[in-house]
Length: 295
Length: 267
Image (tube, rainbow over all chains, first blue to last red; front, side, top):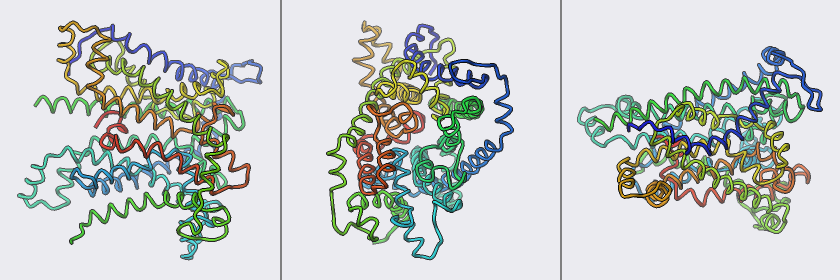
């Protein structure tokens, strides 16, 4: 749709601008302030320049958290994306009560408060009272997510798969539904294999939504905080301390404001970069959509 | 009857999703003695005492009330400011529109952990700590951008000719917007409100940082009470079950738009 140029539209945007300025720009300026200054309280600040950035870039603690974060996000994507596609392909396509029920049940984990997700998995995984912990122990598996780092990792990952795979599946399903039935009939006439149908019909149609799903999952897993915090508290040791957990510890636990602020800004730059990729994908999708209508 | 493989896949997957939730429900209907004493797949001596504890103790149920107050406040604020902005983005081009739209997105993507401390200082300076409005405003950080993006996606689907016809018929802008345009995107408003509600409801980090006692959300009540009284598993599970209810109640109405909402109005 071609939109006319009208700067009066700014008045319509003004409320949003004012509100988001309060809730984003001012706090961000505070962070910037802390990142470049040192303080001993009493609102006295001393210019520290890039000292905090230097400290953070060379901090092994940050490297550890970043490494764990990247590994976590990579594992999450490697499991959730293929599984999500697989589930989407198996979802009932007709619109009836059962397919609606499927949708609702699948979406259920997405609507659970993050701390309750943690609580659910804590209760489910505990060796003394949890179904999972008890079953694994009964099978002779030495499983205890409280003391064993590997078990803690597995628990956090399974929890995230449980929590978010449905998002990938629902998005892919939305993409699949836009495929006209005629495509499948043509494939049938050509005697295309199941794989060929997937590779040449379904996957190209899902490409856009899949990209959104991957980016959303990446972003959200990159800033995961509450769920692992409730289940493992970042432990055992530092085994499941991801970036946000580390940052919260540093800022609100130890009040190391300078380093925490420098950390925040670098964190934010990464987010900005990924947001830009996301934005480009979105606007390209919008353009494809409108050019498709024009045909 | 022939059973299709896809039905098996879906059954297994949904069982996987429901099993942990069932276990929580199971725990909430047991006494603490039964939880720690033995192991059973269903409650042997069924009790509603855990739920009764929560619903009769103000320090528990006020957690839900507080959460609901700031969530509803946030949803109303977000939708009110997002509606005109989304209209502007979907209908006009103006100076810096693309940058602004992108900047909104970065706020949706911003990690709450980065904002927790500055928010605390900002709202301390404004004397708003431990009020519902503070949490509602803080959650605008990610909900306003979300609402703008979702609404813009829906408004894009309404043909511009409708606006033009209304101008010719002599409608003023506010009247056109309220009487003609809003009913047309009623679905979109519903979906945007649902997602604002949801993301505000599930968030804990910011709401925990900004509240102490009066406006304490249920999530915080859960963590604090449990650690203080030495693991009251039954009540904890019951509190968890009760937090699922708002989501479960409304999800049926937006089931066909869930994907669209998560993808910020695109798809």
